[in-house]
Amino acid sequence: MAVCARLCGVGPARGCRRRGAAREQRRGGAGDSEPDTDTDPEEAGGGSSEEDEEAAERIEGGRPLSHPAEAGPAGRAPLSILELPPELLVQIFGSLPGTDLPSLARVCTTFRRILRTDTIWRRRCREEYGVCENLRKLEITGVSCRDVYAKLLHRYRHILGLWQPDIGPYGGLLNVVVDGLFIIGWMYLPPHDPHVDDPMRFKPLFRIHLMERKAATVECMYGHKGPHNGHIQIVKKDEFSTKCNQTDHHRMSGGRQEEFRTWLREEWGRTLEDIFHEHMQELILMKFIYTSQYDNCLTYRRIYLPPSSPDDLIKPGLFKGTYGSHGLEIVMLSFHGKKAKGTKITGDPNIPAGQQTVEIDLAHPLHLPDIENLRDFSELSRIVLEVQEQVRREEQEQEHRQEEENPSQPAAKPVGGEGAEGEDNPAGAEGSTQDKAPASLPFVLPMGVISRNEDYPRTCRICYYGTGLIAGHGFTSPERTPGVFVLFDDDRFGFIWLELKSFSLYSRIKVAFQNAEAPSREAFDEMLKNIQSLAT
Image (cartoon, rainbow, N blue to C red; front, side, top):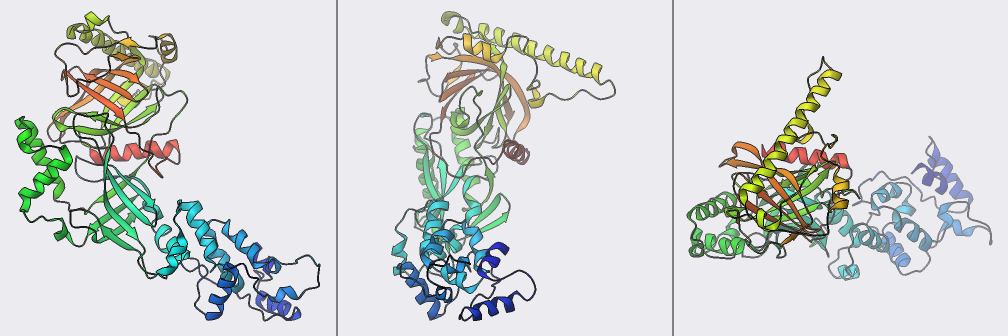
């Protein structure tokens, strides 16, 4: 700002106004470069005089704005940025980040007047937030592009991205995006069980838009009676809350019974009479009672998509997976050296959202038997338990080495709970194993292993030893048990839970989520740690 001030003749030192005024008088001008103190984008280019409005319209229309500096000798190079044509200043200012424009408006009233040009703010809306609508239509409602930027986009910029709602053990996945002239919070839901390869479903929970120049309007979209009054509060960094001010719009004329049947059709795609399993009926009813009590009054915490590396087994990301009577749930697959982790984004009363549902040991590939012997569950169990014992011995050896090297310090706990991520691999490095593996191997589930989806792939690329987290209702007595991670292709994998004799199939969520990338690897790891601690 100091540089701009010197360019336009408003110096940062004491007495600069007098020197600036004297300079303007020498040029025959009126000395209109008085500093301004506003810093909010909402106030950049503010003012309401008829003269300012007329000047902005002349700039917008491409007509030159008369300026005292134009009185200089013909052909003389400009000595100040104020001597540049206003149309050129509009182009220059329009290329700056919107957050810098309030500081620019403080330099002088000329800059402030030029910043009233809607062309500048139309460009900032498009380049910073992807608003491609015809913003000229806003003139009909009396709302300017500066209003859209300052009162809608800039004000609510911190809630854009991916979020996990705090709904007890169930969690969820919310993506807040700029959609035209709205900011909309879309809740993403897995497809109906057990169709794991079907696309995700989504519904709006809230929206924000600018109805008039005063302030943006927040509307709750929950229920079946259309938009109604809501409220959003940014609690702190990476956390915000929503509140519905008209929860009567969520009620249905048929009472709770009608609400439950409607929710059941939307959530499960069936009626209660279609569900014959008594335990499953109890779980469904429990979820309805628990989730409906919030009435869209929720707290959300930011989550990031996992960063990727060329060395990753497959591209990390979000997957939908089958979890028995609990239905389909959303899991985030991320890679951490020689470990891969599956973290629940949505959960259930046994393993809540935020917990690490599976962990894959990429240092220990499994060599499955031929297709006939693979059908024998006892044979698969024997192979897995042998690798589990090998992993246990390696962990003990590592602890002994650490004790010998640092006898005064306790042995460090292996990262991830199943061995250090950077440990040597006596059984052969992961990379060499993958290079030698054939393109595809025949695969079939062993007899007695239960699968919600019988339409799983019959070939796989490679298998690894892993552990899965199991627990009783209410996350009681949690323990990690051995299992088999099966990689089918770039978008699908499975996990065989030996203890449960159960199989989960996972399919990639192919949605281009906006504003969801982690700023750094450290930020992603910290996010994982936070959501797991909250779940615990």
